[in-house]
Length: 114
Length: 112
Image 1 (cartoon, rainbow over the protein chains, first blue to last red):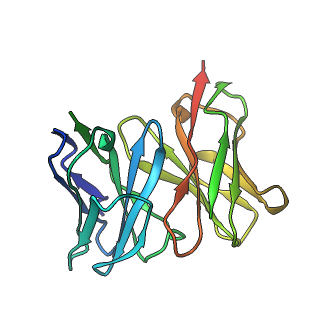
Image 2 (image 1 turned 120 degrees about the vertical axis):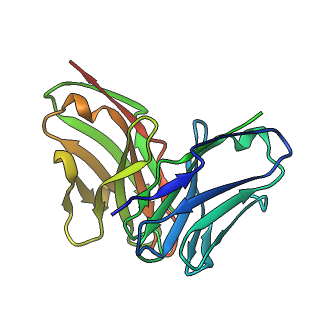
C-alpha cells in the first residue's frame, strides 16, 4: 500500500505570494492532518480534516487554510507569505478523526520564503 | 491544555549502551501518548503508542516506553543502541479530539 505523498517536495516563494501544498493520504484513510515544523517552534498542529470538514484547528492565523476533497486528498494554502512561514510542512493521514489515532506521515514539503 | 517536555535536546550514547530519552507530559484528561522518530529529510515514523491498555508499551526496532501516571512521564528506552538509531525523536500527546502536541525533540547521537 502506498504511503502518504506530498507535492511538491520543495518550494521557493517570495514574501507576499501565496502557496498551495497537496497531500494524498493512504488509501482508505479519511483523516488528514497538517503540521508545521521549524527549528524554533518545533512541530505544531495546523488543522485536521475528516470527510471534507475541518475537525480541529491549531493556533495559526487565518492566512493558513485548508480543504479536503471527496477522495480524501487535502490541500493547504498559505496566503500573503511571510519569512517566518519558511518551514517543513508535514501531512499525516489516519483512518479516523482525532489525534489519538495512529497517524502516518508523509515526507513533507519544504517551503522557503525569500 | 496539553503539553510535552523532552529533557535534553541532544543525547549521546555509545553503541551497545542503554538508550533513555525522557518525556514528561501535561494533560487535563487521560492522555494518548506517542513516540515518533524522524530521520534526516524524512517524515515522522511511529515508534509506539500508549492508549491505557498497558503501562509498558513495546514498539518497533526494540524500543519500549513506560507510562507512569504519578510522574506524568513516558520515557523511551532501548537496551542496546545501534548506529542506525541515530535520529530525532519526538514525544507527543493527544487528548482525544485534538491534534498531536509534540515536544521539542531529542537528537540521539550514537558513538561508535
